[in-house]
Length: 426
Image (cartoon, rainbow, N blue to C red; front, side, top):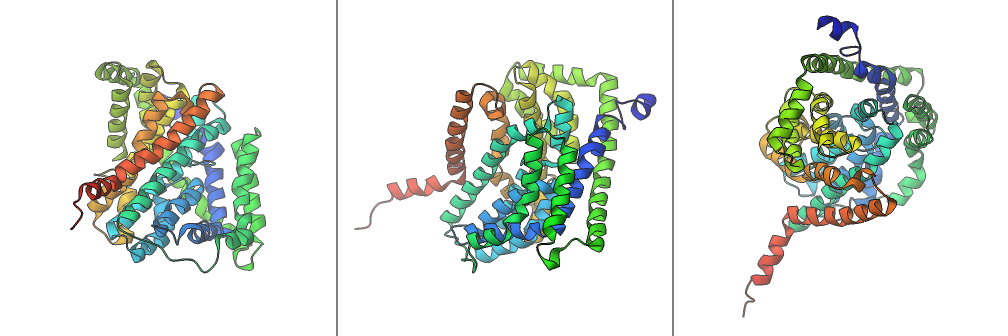
């Protein structure tokens, strides 16, 4: 067993180490350089000017900023800490209760893990496990990620409408900010275009990193000279080492699972318990990933669960990529689902709110996290599987369904019904 884990490709130096060395390090470095070039400020200022003055404006800013920043940060906790330091106090000032403000930010932040072009380390690992090009993973992930953010956005809107919370109008218009700072989108566009054209993720990441350095010279205060270059490299390297330690431990766990034969046994047990029901199987996977997520990082939870759960899902007729997406989405729930939810607790700390109330609020706003896996399992078009007509029909129905789902969960309809039956005073 020790020989397999430490000297062969089934353990520490296996698929996971290869993914880390080939993709993850470069993209973590890219994220550090994108932050240093000044893009993070644009990711907050632009949404603030665009929707900050609307119903629930500050919370909507949190959702959009988390989507933009989360797509390159690769970590829900990093997303909460970075964008939340600005958006959470802004939400509290507008009238959101502390635990609501602290709960909305982590609910929005975990969406960054589904949002291309980077999707955290999980997207690259998924490409390695499935043998599919990363560009395919990206294409399948875009619409579900947008639907997740749309769901949180709608729930925020209806919550603010119930409590009559309105933001303040920005002094500068969104169009004006976009005209002056649009170039901060260039690195993300460069990476996306090159990967869609078939270039390797590593090559695309290097080009994106170079574009960060180039656009940093647009302003004197953000120029990446020798000193800022070293600081960005150091920050990216430190973050990579944290992921590397996790990946090594994951390799050991996967090696033990594979060597012991538990992978196939667990899949058989899951199929047996579910009695051939796909819905029950997804529920059991959600439970397993939540328990795993209490003790290991979410990427580790995805990997460990994928090894044992994907065979069970494919046995029930789910295509391989959709099966991995189900596991990947559910692996994120430990960030916002009590009792162990680090991202939600980070939001509570910034908001100075009760941790448990914040955690349950975050769980409430992130409900699409549990609807998405069901759609992956039952609607092939959700993972681009099927004819063009089937995919378009699925997208239209899911778009409407996401709005209806958010409307129902928000509880705004309760007030409408009460108002309808309320007697008109004479």
